Image 1 (tube, rainbow, N blue to C red):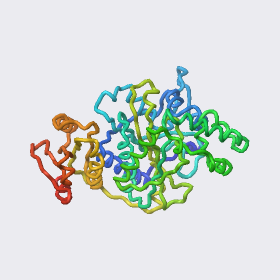
Image 2 (cartoon, rainbow, N blue to C red):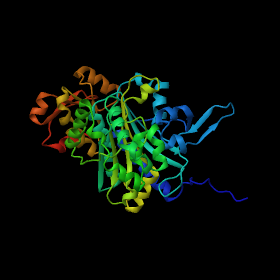
Image 3 (spheres, one colour):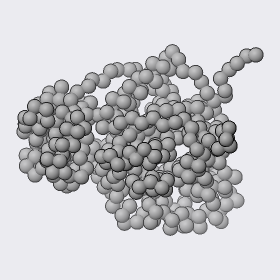
Image 4 (tube, helix red, strand yellow):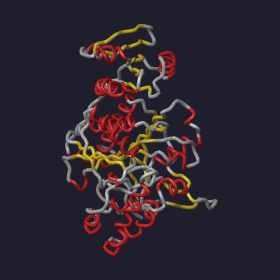
Length: 421
């Protein structure tokens, strides 16, 4: 009998290993710079986890999950995505009891039963990040910055960031009501999948690729025209921080996410060098209610997922080669006021663009507690940004291990970078 791998799966060897190792190495290097720690979760979970987390009205739950009963009749499912498993893990292991925000990344294989095609297999690999415990828009911008930096570090040049807000529990219900009122008289013109989505998960209609459904959506009300005041302010702050980082973006008012757990900011990275049908590289967004929905604490969160297999395909198309990254010293940044977040982003951008590990204290701690936290997290330096530093375009750098302090003028950036060697 001739044996072969199941349809939609593949063996990984030769050149594929080279690309895979390169991407994972690059990912781990930059995740370390942004202060993310790895988490590994099981390849299968109880089915209820994905039913609740992804949403019963989604195509994944309805059509694409590999679900089976174990020998005791319990329903198990091969994970179709990573976020729900990470949320389950932090609740079960009480990881939220440690210092927040909790910054995690994962690398693993996922499984979906769908028609195999180039860049889309039944077993595929994802790289993802999740941040728990803060609902500040600066974290949305930071996660987007990380994603953008990751692809630039791989060698991608012509990237476009698509951005949108899909509101919160306060404003989205009224939008869904108006959207359904628009769609209802046009139901007969929708495909069968979208007619099913209408009741279970109406915003998923925006994901449909069929021309007839796309045409109906052209004049549909847009969700970012129906945001509450809090969501408008939040989204405005995200855009302000992205502007501070000089990250270009385009508002895509028709973009939604395929999973029910997303709220507020959503985003996607596409390559302008690739045919439009296959140019999406990665995407993600904020999900502030999922941990609580799983009977955990009220932990807001934001994250993204990268398709490892698709990234390899696009790297080959663009003839992107490999290179090594260096390891340098690390610094923990504390600002005296939230008003100085934009200044701190400018400094963090300088450091991270040069592969220097750094992170920001989001709670504006006093110097003493900040030093203790930096020591606990094993940083080399503590960087202070206060009134004098912002006024003088400088930073104060404390060498935690040698008990020395330096005042560095940021007009002389090379001095700061040399100290991090």
